[in-house]
Length: 117
Length: 112
Image 1 (cartoon, rainbow over the protein chains, first blue to last red):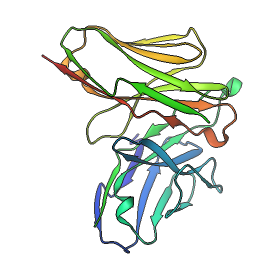
Image 2: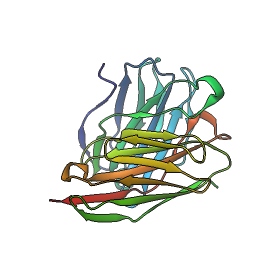
Image 3: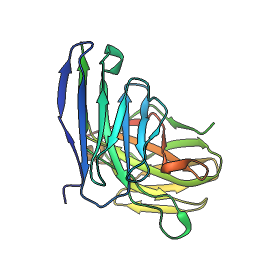
Image 4: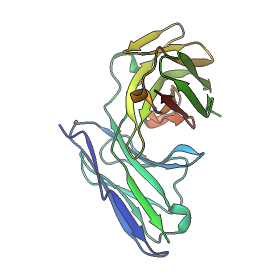
């Protein structure tokens, strides 16, 4: 199993350009997440999809849109990139809660490094 | 508001010098506390999940413990390959979608 894969690995954009970050998982997980990681800020949730067909905003959703294409794939779109969106973007996935609804582990992809000039 | 604070921000150890990393949390009902390791240029790699106060888990030179207010990641006789950033995250019972709240991480450097 490849786990969680992300494309591209690195991208440079000019202010105002658009792009879509792709994420796919082969673990048959129901929930998928997009985070951004900035120095000194930790990982912050942008959007998530608790199950196929649903998406919800996280902590920092402004300037982003998402699409849960199917159970495997969850994409993040920047419609008009801004320098403030320069960051490292991580996708993660997890299965549904098990017996007792205990906390479930999220598994992360390798990240996409985005530079907006 | 759910919050996670990790300390110290950076820790430099000599090989074999044991120490602990701290993760203090405030959450409205802890569903799970997670430790991850992150190497430069890579995604976070899962280490441990702790569910209730008093619980402990071990993996090689790492041992994670949990109280009602904080978690510790103890590193015994560290080696240079243990150098990485260690991330702590919590999941609350009342959040929807299984969201995680992350701390800022502790950057560990182990010198030979």
